[in-house]
Image 1: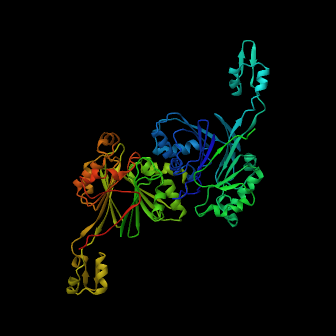
Image 2: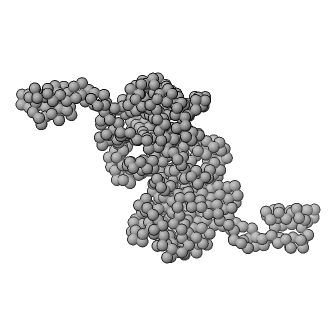
Image 3: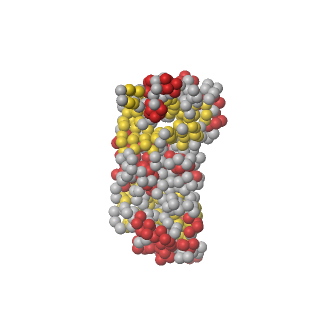
Length: 303
Length: 303
């Protein structure tokens, strides 16, 4: 129901055996992509997902490995005869960067809407989703993103019967509608319990560990975090290039008390990330060194 | 010695099983690439060739599938610590288009030199190569390219002995140098036969058949030509989108009397180009429906 697919897991440059890091989320007919590097449209086809229904693309930052696939992706979406607008979200300067890149895709059959994030964090409500952008610590302005959905409280059928609410109104009340029936007014709070835990996915790449990550990833169902380097002794290099080691990512997962972590955005020099996953698991056991096409179908907790 | 590799064979968009059409030529330490679509750098890695030594990139035109991979390619070349300049050749507007795309690759450790072609055709001499750009017939300005090398005449050792040319000068004369030795002057024409046949590769995609192609491809050793559609009954579609069918390409190969033709730039709807290659072979038998990574090592004719 809340499908999450890590289309690629590479950093810096696409490789014959590893696409660039990008995430796609599908829920209730809405499709959101995070980042779009060179080849992301191919990675998407490889997992059998289509670019046509993409409604929103979130950009972490404007390094080429996170945005260079946009003109090609847009042309493929255009060729699929999509006409609904697409919303792009990213750091300040987004419109200018995208318009520059679209010099080679000047005619698209859909409109582009831009949301430029300026502050330390910003919430965007988009259909069923809350999108939270939060600033991280890279060598250019870079944001992490939470993509989350709420879950309403439980419907109390006994209460509805006691209040003599007619059956046809039950599903409307569950959807949050208020019903007027002659003199009577039925409101959702009359029959719905307190809101239940929703689903939250946190995504952050191209950053050193920082407080914002722990704050925003708090209790995430899935925490997708960069792990540019597997070996602990690459810490100096991680610091220099403003990236992380696996064990640094694991400490964030632990501090944020997330349920599960997927590592991604591996250095081209990191041939077999799984050989180093124990460096993270020692600190945060529920870690996966994700592969291209790693997928999950996140579900609400059982009541 | 004159290596030619068709890195990809797709048109329009990169696919999981087919890279976009691009050609790389390597000869005597010089590397020339034609076109650079999304994923071309991956296709190059896949055949084991490196982007680092690329000296020149020729662009046929500015549709995204022929140039969208440039920022990523340049960053990968930059990461390999190359500092020598790279020459880009393409239709008028090249510099503006490339500078727009490089908004996401603003700092490169090498200079870029631009050659913009304006007329119906233009010859560029680059190291050992003659590059001939010739206008073709697409829905935007588009050029085909000849990449050719000359071959000197045969050295006549008997003549050199008769003329009493000292042995240490022989190789210099073969390289075209003139030698002054006291009162004597030795010139290459004294010992070299008439120029012999060189090697010529003709490359043309995104075009209807046109006279320039036959003129410039005349007697090419290898003619690489688009074949967007395999079926003859796709002719109307080929005309509409300014592309070609396999049999149209074959007619060009026949008229130009080339030695061999490779078809490329297949439509995404053309799953198995080889199923239709007989449509070309009936007209021009020495046709290959090329695959990603099709490679040839072209040699001078035996004397």
